[in-house]
Image 1 (cartoon, helix red, strand yellow):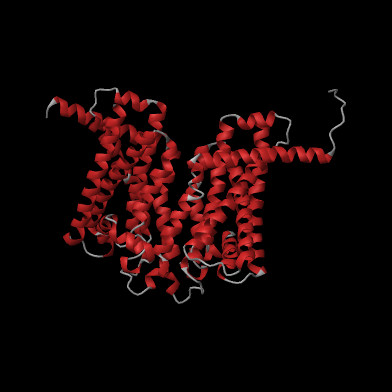
Image 2 (cartoon, helix red, strand yellow):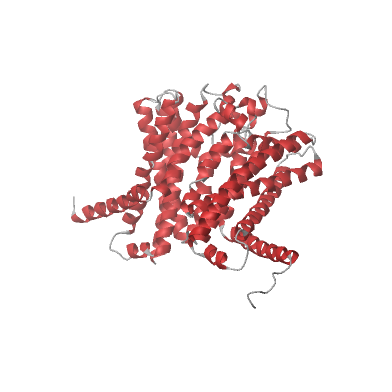
Length: 271
Length: 258
């Protein structure tokens, strides 16, 4: 091909990049299902935590200020889904950091594809894993007696919010991987996920949290996301909580995207 | 002391020191495990603190109730980490060289699992400093000594469980199995609330599980007086589980060397 050859049309370029992103996304999803270290934090540990919370603190629904719910399991499902999607983001960070460490990302950077493709592929995979987690928790919730008050439309809203939250946390995970390049650093983020969740309304109503968690939860963007995912499960579908959840997701995505762009440009400078 | 026993003790101590050296040399790998029990204690107290308002709750200070769970959790995860580290040593071939050495199998196991008994003192120290500064009741010297002794033994038992799985699967990919096992052992108990306030399946599981007896022995000094009646069931349960886990780990070692 001569140096002056015309660039392919925009549509063909976009289709080509979409194929690359889809291929990298498929690779990431397969990687998660093949390695128990990546899947366990997304499915196994949140399921165990859900079981312990429900059995251990189930009598909380008898507290005078607890909102009306069918059961404590119904209330806890949103927390389990959030935990799962946040840990999916951390697992994505570990996997991406491993890709950086073994030189896979360097080979992608040298390939004739858009440089953000490998990040977008990882985000697509994290979104897919989020949907899988959402389906899993809705499934076990229904099996163990939970009710989705808003019915099928409510379940679809829940899945959409869970998938978007997974992508939002995928951007945070990618930012950590790109800025540190170290799986150990990414691994070290696990406890911070729990701090963020404990300081939100993910596991308990905001009005029943103890101080200072209660005040922090009011400002934590994970609280509206938890409430938005929970709302269709414990009450009829309403727009307000869903919009507030989308706002929370936008805040997390915005932070992740800015940090990600910084990490990517640093990575490309050093490549 | 005979020369043989002295050699075995020196070998055990050398293996323990190697595991403890990792704390200073790879701190990034240790920090999450040290922080996790304290984060869980503070987080669970902030989230579920109002459970003490329920009739039948045995204390009005949830932080005091939940701190002993941190002892057990620290012990359990330190033990699981010992299993993961052994799996790494197996993957790298280092453990094969140990098996080829003249050290008896029991010494190799003792050196590996007793390191967990010492390492657990790190998360527990942090837990106690944070807990006491946040107002947790002082358990008394006897209560603290019993809690420390039980947590150290439980860490070694959890390490035996981790070692058994590491020898069986010979890969770090078994880590979630090690962590999930100890997670269930510690939290499928009276961790969050007294037995009478647990609900559904957990009430039945906690009733038949020996680990709550151990947890209540650790907890007794924090929520009340230390009594022999609250101590011996925990020690007995600890001994029973310990014998079983040591036997399983030794069987795994013998099969690995065969």
